[in-house]
Amino acid sequence: MFSKILALALGVLTLADAHQVPLRAGSDVDVSTPTGAQDATIFSLVYGIPLTQYVIFADSIANKSSGQWTTNSILHETTLANATYRAIVRPNVDTLYSESLIDLSVNDVVATMPAVEGRFFVWPFYDVYGNNFCNIGTATSSRAGKYLVKYSPANPGCIASDTGEYAGTINMPTPYGAAVLRIEVDNTTDADYVVSSIQRTFTIVPQAVDRPQVAPALTRSLLNDGLDVNDIPLYIMQLTARIAPFNLPEESKDVAWVTSVLQLAGISDGPYSQPSGVDLPTAYSAALAEINSIETRGFFTSFGNGWSALRADVSGDFHGHYNVRAFVALEGYMQLNITEALYPLYEVDQTFFSNQSYTVEFYGKPQVLAFWSLTIYDEQGYMVPNDLNRYSLNNRGSMTYPNGTLISETPADSGARFYMLLQSTDYPASPEWESNWLPTPADGKVFNFLMRFYRPENSLFDGTYEYPKVTAVEVNPPIPSAL
Image (tube, rainbow, N blue to C red; front, side, top):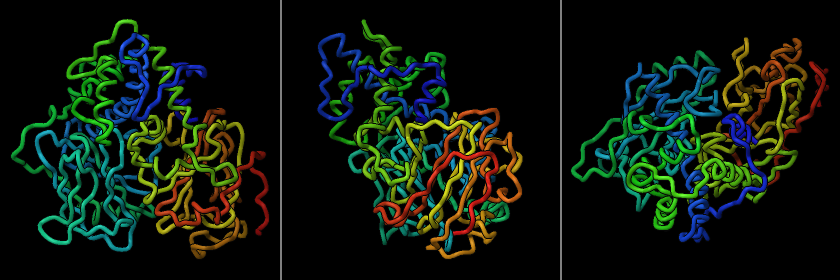
């Protein structure tokens, strides 16, 4: 799957017969032998992989801020994600992003959310590992106003308030974290309105508090300097040694055993110290095998016609499922909780090549309270460059039924069939397909696609809705007759 592709992109072979370490409390890691240190290293690599994505996110914010490293503020993206966007893998193009790098090592933070009527938005907060532990916004009917964001590992999550200075409190499980506001937009003109009239009314500012410092200040140097970035397994261990001792597991019951396993692997308060006898490349291959194994271990729910998604209890906020947490970090860091968005994947073990065209047949509109989309990504999880600058099709644009009627102009529960064409930029779509064409990469390259259902209704979970059928076809096939 995508994580396998990324593993190969890093030049590492995934070993099908690699040893797999239990990644839940009650682990049987042997703490007394070199084999135990090797197993502990496998776990530590799985545990630390999300931190690499956090660094990518943090550095991306700095690059967009004229090279200035900033924390506890908000960077508003003024254009939709496109083929140059690199802050996170598999971004959406349905919303404008506003990104924040949060550091509660010394200060608290105050997040101010305005009243926004008639438009979906969600303001998710993440710990440093990518757990979506709190959301405020449309789906949660959160009250407009100020929210106090503070480090509170004993009680992570959102606490609403109807009175007082704050509309609520956001308790972060780790002192380092992030927030990625997403505001729905319909088109370029609508995006301009959101930028000028809505986006800038969301703010994040630090607030001084009288308490001891709980971690080193979050700086560019902390996340980047002196790390062996050209040796991926060593880099992950070094980065984890810097960050993990001050950013403990979200699950308080896991703190003691996770800390002991990390220590066995050479990770404690200070630089990484590789234990004698540990083979890092082999451990990394085993870690990737463990991450990829979730595809066959019951973590996915099948919706039919080849579509499936991570179970609700391991979507967005992963708790003690560290293998799933790493899987999502590689596949789509900063996933939303399933109450906000459902992410169906097609044929999780399938690889698609753009020298083959495909149709996606929808048996009626997916039922959502907000909106839905299908987005194409290249092998690395980024948008596919194309002359139309089209990366996604959704229920709000120019896509049509076979008879030419705009899909956006029919009722939300319309059962009429419609089609998308997934086809390489090497073969531009014929005029009859142009509104429903999603360009895939040139030169036969690998691609993947992902659906997003924002505020999904029960029909998308309970088998009521029939998921789309994907079919390999010839280039520019005839559009099926209206049904």
